[in-house]
Image (cartoon, rainbow, N blue to C red; front, side, top):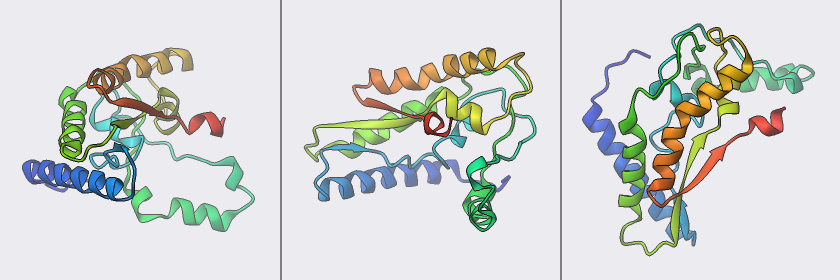
Length: 178
């Protein structure tokens, strides 16, 4: 939104939020915990801050299953949080621009897990399909080229999570939406 942010204060709050999230999961009896996606504004739109190529115009989503339910569509699309999330279109080559973000996510979860005796941890990452659903493509010549570029760029985050000994959950609600 262009609002100045104290990056150090935000990073510290994310660290403490992850630790709080893990502790609540442990208190609830969960033994394979996650970070609650505390560093991400949403499960898919966070990639615009981690990948290049997403500076194009946003194209609003249209959910076909809501056409017959305009009141529900208004409720879904007028949500204050949703209206603040940006989904700029793909207008350039996709590549990783912030390698540290995935590393920070892993480190925050592992630090939050310390001393809790959990069996393990998992982290979620957006699927290429859900990214292509939210971020319209005007750069790549066809869907296949676009989806493969997204997948190749996301490989870094997927491997960072897996190589840290955490389980990777690829969020792909697009499978059910298809």
